[in-house]
Amino acid sequence: MLVRRLARPMLSAIFISGGIDALRHPAPTSQVADPVAPKIASSLPFSLPEDTEQLIKIDAAVKIVAGGMLATNRLPRLAAFSLACSLIPTTFAGHRFWEETDASTKRNQQNHFFKNVGLLGGLLLAAVDTEGRPSLGWRARRTAKVARVAAGGAAGKIGDALPVG
Image 1: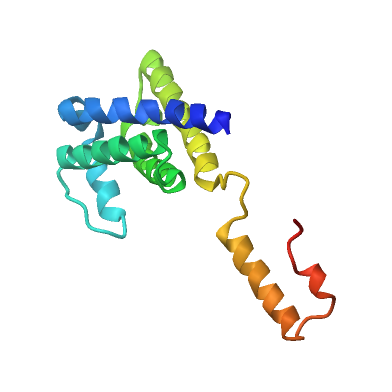
Image 2: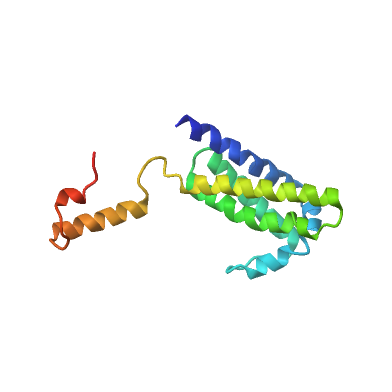
């Protein structure tokens, strides 16, 4: 569909450009994220480095690779899910508006925080988009139902369990 061909690269553009910038210049982001990034990384169920600059470089690589995958329609659901998982800690580490005392800075950080929340919503939609095809879960349930009907274990006609078309 044309909308997907346009929307996926548009959605991924900010992740690719931001990832490239963070990979080239991790220090500014590292200074902002340093108070919370190691805490976030240590709370995850897998091992990550505690060095904030290394975390930023890993996050940048995820954004570049997953953004490129989404933009080029390569495993788009996995790419969108990866970007969503990367965006959550980035948002909490980089846009802590609730800690700001200056009204202008607070408003700016709040705008970035909610921009990221909007991006997260778009990524979640992209992550569950099956492009009109039935999901794997639906197909598995339908197959199990057909098998039960064929074995005589379910009431009803076999036509009730078969997909139309």
